[in-house]
Amino acid sequence: MILAGGLLYVAVLQPWWGFWGEPAWVALRFAYAGLYAVAPIALGRLVQTRAVLAQRLSDLEALRDSEARLLLGEVLAVERARLSREMHDVVSHQVSLIAVQAGALQVGAPDAETEETARLLRGLAVQTLNELRTMVAVLRSRGDGLEGADDLHLDRVLRVADVTELVNASGQDVSVDIDLPSLSPSYERTVYRTVQEGLTNARKHAPGAAISIAGMVADGAVTLKVHNTHSQAEGPRLPSSGFGLVGLQERAQLLGGEVRTTADEDGFCLVMHLPYPHADAADIKTPEG
Image: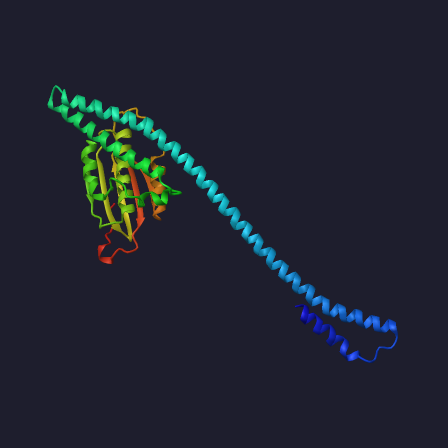
């Protein structure tokens, strides 16, 4: 750049070489030549400085984003650790007591019906403990969000085939018509959790109501419907977080789908749609109702 400026300086002076004349005129020519030579150099330096500053600004923004992610990861790690401790120390302890008491009741049951109820309670308590251990493992993992949770090697993999066992354990009047192809673990877990939430809501808000569960591939999407009729019986007064449907919506959104609920004179319906882009045209069914 400096060499180019020097050459330009000489090129501007060269036509006047030997025709200097008055000293003031000579000084003026040298000044003009200097301006011609310095201006491109200054412009080039300005462009270089601007590029360097822009790169440094980009580096600072990247560093700031990286620090923000690290800080968020640390905050999430601390919060997950706290939640896992509370779940292990409080919830797991209480559920373990339920399992022990149910086992004792099963051994000393006065009749077969009480023994069967105690056996069911103990089985559910043990299953709940396994689920709690899974959730504690997820919370203790180094993942930064829900996206990685289903990719962990969990002790109990929830599948669509397990819906029948879930329905039998619920003790409710349920009809099941699920015709789904083999799905990925994330899809199968989401379908299972949707059925589980539907059964739980029906048990709490419409005890004794008839429940129907239907699942199929329809219009290029995995569609699952859990419908329950109205009930005149008063539901049990159970504590509720109010986040069950919110959690289902989050699960569906992670897979690009959605969850909708409708209530009418026929009852309450929970509908989940998940995209199924690789569905074969011959496998796609037309939903009924």
